[in-house]
Image (cartoon, rainbow, N blue to C red; front, side):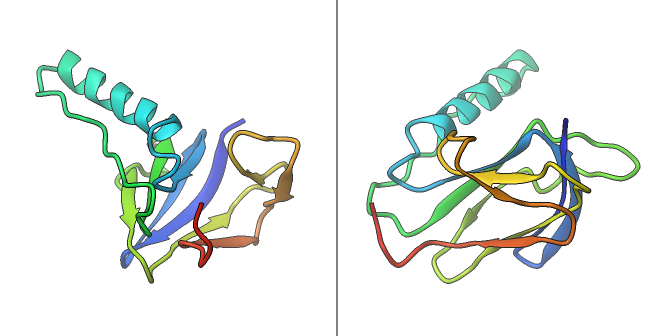
Length: 131
């Protein structure tokens, strides 16, 4: 099932439908985030554009990076806000549009979830504690 939510970031807002949103710290930027950039670079090269290196953050970097997984464009959802850097002191806001079954989980551990059903909102920002 696709996730449905409203994303608010850097003064913009967009309703989206996707496989979810990946948020990475500097400590995690060589894992799943790196694979998303590798995929995007490969697709760009396939279409004749120049490929690019994955974005990597230093371990201590206070910024976060988000990437929307498999964004789906339709009459009710957009894909213009597919990635961004959450600077220290700012936040990404995600509001659930899922009647049921919406979840937030960390580092691929789906058994350790927070319910994220319609009306719930999450603000994602850098924590005071670092890895």
